Image (tube, rainbow, N blue to C red; front, top):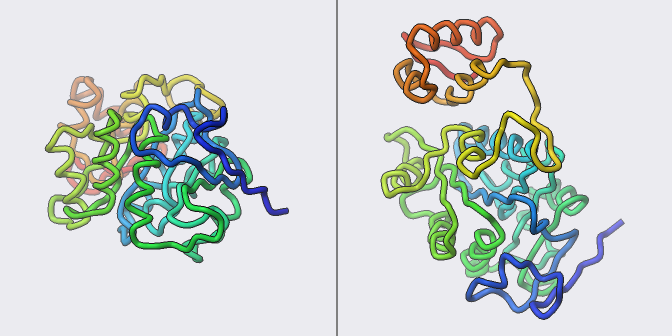
Length: 289
């Protein structure tokens, strides 16, 4: 059954508190489903539409972990990073939310029909544009300020040097939000935006747990309405495992991140390899399996 499309004006009690204190916010919102809970941590996730397989995997996995910890994921339901962020979040127990550049009753892009139908079952599709409004080029940069406005922090995964995602970053910074960026290879065009953000002071996001810990969440215990999917690791193993990235991480980096002595890190890495969680792909270079 089709969900009722709600119109919520800024004069109504249900208008998001996160937006009330910000300038240039819409006078009303159209919502299919519901809005994010005010008291629950929300992370905006944005990135390239023409992303790599690595970017898709990272977006999906980070969003899944966020959802498992009770964190609401909000994005724009676009192709690429946006869509994979929603799909990853849908694997967990916490609702995800999409801010659209068209009416909330319009499915765009059509290839994301699965998200259009699934997201409002527990979360919501949100738009400042009235029902039936078609997607327009200028709608999408404008809606980015709502994505960042509804978020407590923003995470960027793959972005070119001149990327629409960086518009969302500018909005987030103007709104006083923390910006995280997932690093990439220096030779990849899709990594230029994120690596540039990190060089300018964005918080490096080497794992979803690192993002959550930076935001004050203890990832070793259950938080919010979601539950972390446990893989049965002791605390020391879990700490080293969380430092291993989806791109090769060298032994010295793991020592620095974990704070453990070299011998202990090597011992833990050996155990993680036996468990099938980590793979050594070169001399002292490791990736998650």
